[in-house]
Length: 176
Image (cartoon, rainbow, N blue to C red; front, top):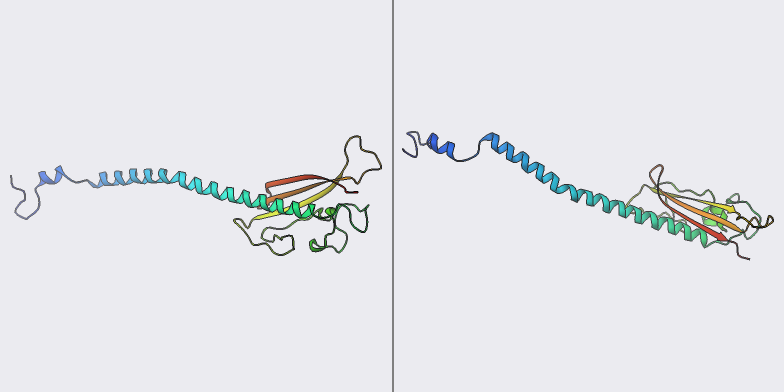
């Protein structure tokens, strides 16, 4: 039998013996696409985990920085040792002069400040924000007239509207 017919084309027997049909090519492409997608899945999950770890790292740094800034202030207001928690009228973060001035302090996402009250550049996530509360507390057995001896300082770091990422709590004793 001849390799080609009179028109120069390969014979029908030769054509059906080699090569792929359109259906076989589509099936092979589909299998290849499924294998490629499943092979990239662990890499995309790894990237998401790295991003989350970076966000947690940044949240921890922001919370620790705020806590250290609060604890660097004196326990009592220099002018009034009996003041209730919260900043006195007219004070801003730049002029806070004691620990309890930070009671109720909050920053919005993208508007974070450093200890010098300067805008902090956004890190891996510009959706992080933080808040602080300072509450006077007493312990069982503590004398009734000794109500301003301890404060609980809480710094929360959030991602987005309400997702709490980190929380830092310290009990601070007054200095005499």
